[in-house]
Length: 53
Image 1 (cartoon, rainbow, N blue to C red):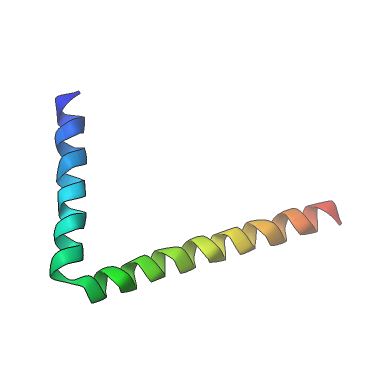
Image 2: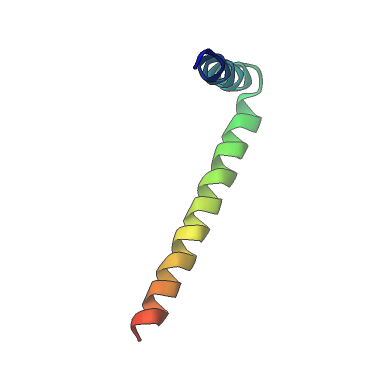
């Protein structure tokens, strides 16, 4: 249980550090992740649409 908490805090710390030290890279990374999620959602919507046809 403690390892899980340590890893969680380390991950949050890394994200905060990344945001403050490299804000442009953090913004680009966030944009890329959101584009990937959007593409995945579009693909799922097309799949479901073709299943009902």
